[in-house]
Amino acid sequence: MHASHSFLKTITSIPGVPGNEVQVARYIKSELEGHADITQDYLGSVIAKKGNLGPKIMIAGHMDEIGLLITSITKEGFLKFQTLGSWFSQVMLAQVWDVITDKATVKAVTGVKPPHMIPVEQRKQALPVEQMYLDIGVASKEEAEALGIRPGQMVVPHHVFEVLGNGKYLLSKAWDNRIGCAVVMEVIRRLDSNERNTVYGTFTVQEEVGLRGAKTSSYVVHPDIAIAVDAGIAADVPNGDAIEQSLGKGPQILLYDSGLIPNRKLRRFVIDLAEQEKIPYQEAYIPKGRTDAGNMHLAHQGALALSITIPTRHLHSHTSIIHHDDYEHTIRLLLKVIEKLDRKRLDQLLAD
Image 1: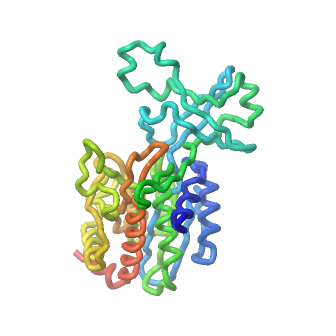
Image 2: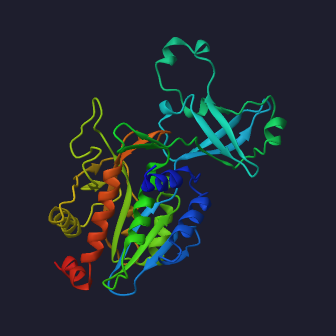
Image 3: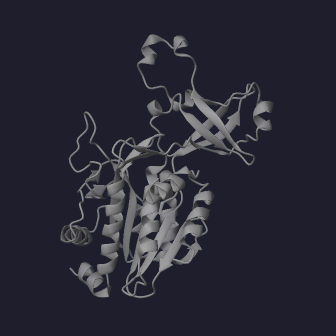
């Protein structure tokens, strides 16, 4: 397996839903030790600082993935749950999950009552999440508890990492947003001694439930420039609109999302750099949805902000797909941005 594929497989395999990102944080800190000065805010976001001069540049990827939270165990041993993050109910049925207990990982499958018992007209509709349960293959609540199942435990999609097709397409759970974390980690690792600015590689918590870690960590960092790196929308599928939203055509430099209207000068600066360096890019937008930049740019007196996303097919499901070239091009672009952002450039971006 390609070395970068092995790294991506590892980081996507780690369970970490909103409010329970500790294992992901532990891995990131261990990988960046010796590359940066590492701290954490009280909510759990990891901040890796590199450099001590010039403007403060905050690049952030969120550690949490969408998942479930166990709320109760029925007397028959089935598990009821609360979704964490936005799930499309139609992709949840008959899927395999990992319930993370203190003892071990317990396999589960999503179920509802048999379709034979559902009126024909209702079968044509998406079944609500509230009717679903997790089946772990036991006969009673006591048997479930004997396996270590307790309310409050996290549940994540069962992990399967695969290199598909021509070797460029990568399938996994949790691309949203371990791919952003991987990009930020690689930027920190590849960055030189950095005497032009101060870079804060930030790995936030609880993005999927309201950009919460972005709020606390940006107040710690107090950035001049804030760039969120997240999974984006790929629409290069049947009946989709592939314009500027395709795998393999470079990172998406967002025009708009529901949490941020990006700074026009910063966005133009990044696009000009991409063109000068011959780094492919796309100009996309997200009409419904937002990134951590939605909170990052509001700390203190505000920050010049931008969202950069990696196109992703089948978002918010067990099996999303990205393109390896988009990952590498995003790293290249951010390294070039950091290379050019000094105090003089910041003053130019801030000027009327």
